[in-house]
Length: 282
Ligand code: ADE
Image 1 (cartoon, protein in one colour):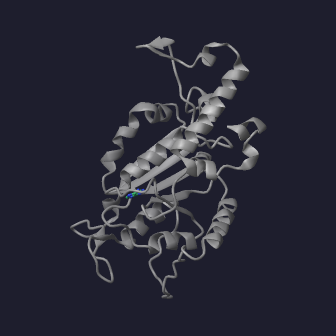
Image 2 (image 1 turned 180 degrees about the horizontal axis):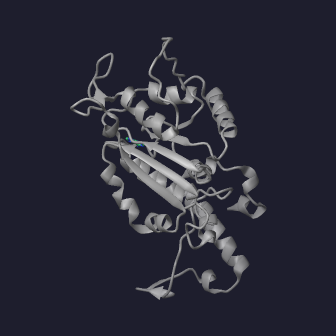
């Protein structure tokens, strides 16, 4: 397969639906291969426990590092680490005062890891937002491993440990809201990533033109189909004029106006070089 995807979860059945629909077809065509694993398969106790109370107190449960590590060592093909000789306190960077430094190391990491290196991805509501650019980058990778956290999260040493082993580790939030666990977030990321794999979708052009893609980080213009008049509502007449230049201009203006209305943050973030002269008066 072009891409191997491992998913670790305490609800592996959740991912059975991936065999249906478009991802099912891509699996049948041999473009992707998805395996979902039950984290509890790596436990050794009778209760198959994967979580414990938070150190320092607080509500809820936190996923234990040992179980995750046995599982991830195996999926990453790393030798199991039984003996730890040095004990050091974790120094997790505080992103609040060092945002620039953090993004510099992130860029360096991206360059350091070739596309055939596995990428380990943890959905996490307290992480940077997952974007179309991330989906595009990850669609070129050969091996993605998703670790679904449940309950109140996972021990922070898990991603830190694998980063120290030179693994390309990512943590992403899919939006500013809280889900019960990572399963839905992984489904969202997987759909965004896999549809960008060459040969996955029939029509490559529909990907190029859509919102959030490339320089075109605008919301897409409105779409219409026939009939030209429906319940007294006519489609914009320029669309039936047959003048492709005018149609393009109309759609571009509409996209700009729509974006400034609905998502002014995207206009704010727009690269000025992505604008053309005629855009300026819009
Ligand atoms: N886990 C819980 N909520 C999440 C979110 N919004 N994004 C990613 N993972 C999550």
